[in-house]
Length: 164
Image (cartoon, rainbow, N blue to C red):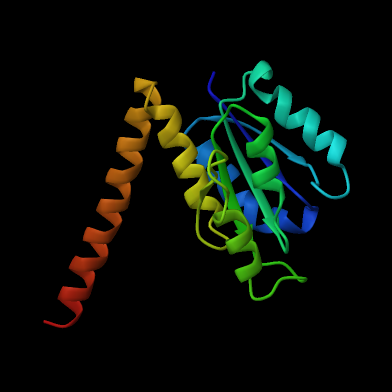
């Protein structure tokens, strides 16, 4: 079973990160979720990041607000792909501090970064990473994207009809 780990620095980030959980479950991908703070539980973060691949995790999604060190610190310790979700938190400077902290990683320590509060896209990206090597997951992604196309075509038809 393909597995994605979703971690965040605080339970206040869960309101955003739940969107990644929802879309991954919709795509029938196994998910685990935990609170791992880079600043308040650094040893837990070190242990999590260093050993996630040994537990069958294949992609990590890390959400963080404010200084947003969690995604980058995890990326520095794991061989797995890490997707960072900047979270607009109560101690944030309109979310820009989080975006830039996750986006501006040094060479050699990449973190794929999605939009501010973009956990849904992080979940989709994690599924696409898994789908690159798993035909069943890739087929579910294809159906998912076809569903997006169908929704837009329905909206388009309704809009055109409304103004005829």
